[in-house]
Image (tube, rainbow over all chains, first blue to last red; front, side):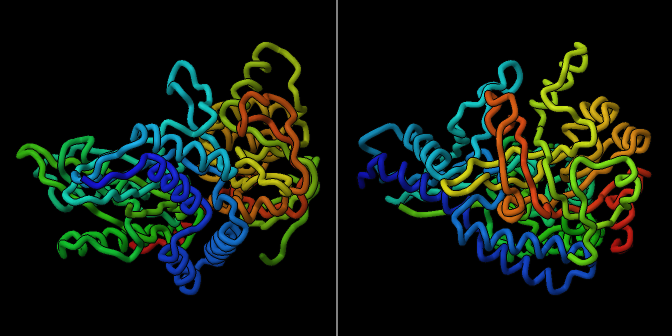
Length: 281
Length: 185
C-alpha cells in the first residue's frame, strides 16, 4: 500500500480551490476570445469583452473572478492501493476548503440548514464530495467551485425510453433556453444521461468540469453534443442574455447504463466562469 | 462602451424617465447593496410600519454579495446576482421611491408593472465580471445587518460604474427585444 498523508490532501484541495477561483481555464478564455471575434451583436461583443478583461484582472491580481465563489464540489478517484494516513479523509477535504475560502478571500456562501435555519457556516463547508474507488496507487482530486446563479437553472427529468434522442435533445435545449439570461451566459452545459436519478445528476456535474472543446469519446455522443450546442446558439439569447450568437460555449455529455424502463437526463448549467481544477497525487 | 450616459445618485424621476432600454450608463455616487436575506428584513419592517435603515427614495440598489476584500482593496470582487429572487420583495420598495436596481436576469411582470407605475429602471451589470466591476467601487461600508456577512446592506461609493438599461421605466425590455434579432429559426 502506498501511504498518503491527509495533510497532503488538505493542502492539495486548498491549492486547487484557490487556483480554480482566481484563474479561468485557458480553454474557456481561448473560446471567449474566439467568440468575441465572431459575435455579431454589439452588446454581446461588449459583454464578452468585459468578461475577458475580468478574467485577466482576476488571474493577474489573484482575486476571485466571480464574487459567488460557489459551493465546493470535490470529485475524488481513490486508487485502491492507497492508504490515507495521519488524519480523516473527509476532514482533510473540508479543512482544505475552509483554508482556501478563509485565507484566499473567497466568499463563504453555505448555510447550515436549507429550510429552517439558514445560518452561514462561515467557512464555506461542508464540501460536497463524490468518491470513486479505482485501480492503482494514485488519488485524483478534481474540484469545482459551483456558483448558484447557474445551479438554480439546472434541471433533471426522467424521460421515457420512447422519448429517444429527440426527447433528450429537446429537454436539454429547452432547459438552456428557459434559463435565458439568468445563469450568466455564455454557459457550459454538463449533461448526464442514464444511470439512476442521482447518477445522472452526478454525471452532469462531472461533465461541467470537462475542458471546452473536448468531446465525448463515443462519436455518437460527440455528434449529439455539437448538434445541441448549435441548436442552443440559434436561440439568440447571447452573452448576458442581451442578444447574440454566443449563448453556450460547450455541451458536455456523460452517459451510463440505465434501467430498461428509464431514460434519466440531468442538465447541470454552469456559467462562463466555470471554475475547476484537477491534480493527481 | 460608446455613447455612455452619466448619471449621479440620488436620481430624480425626470432623469429616470429619460433612460431607454439599451442605453449604456456610468453611475457615480452612493448605491446600496441588498440580496435575498436583507430584502426579507426590509419588507418585514415595511409590513410592521417601521422605519427602514436606508431611505430608498431616489436610490439605486445593487443586488450583490461581495467576496471579502484582500488587504489593500476597498472591496472584494462584486458582480451582480440573479435578480428574480428579489422580485417578490421589490414592488414595496419601488412604492417608497426606489429608482433603480442593478442585477442580472429576468424580472417578474409585477416588478415591471411597478417600475412603470413609479418610474424606475432595471440596470444590468455583467454577471461574472466581478473583479472588473469592483474597480469602479471606491468606498464600501456596512450600513446594517452585519450578521448576514456578504449579504449585509453595504453603502458603496461608485465612480463610473458600468451598466446597461435592460428594462426602462416604460417596460421596454432588452431580454425580449434583443434575442429575436439573432434567433435562427
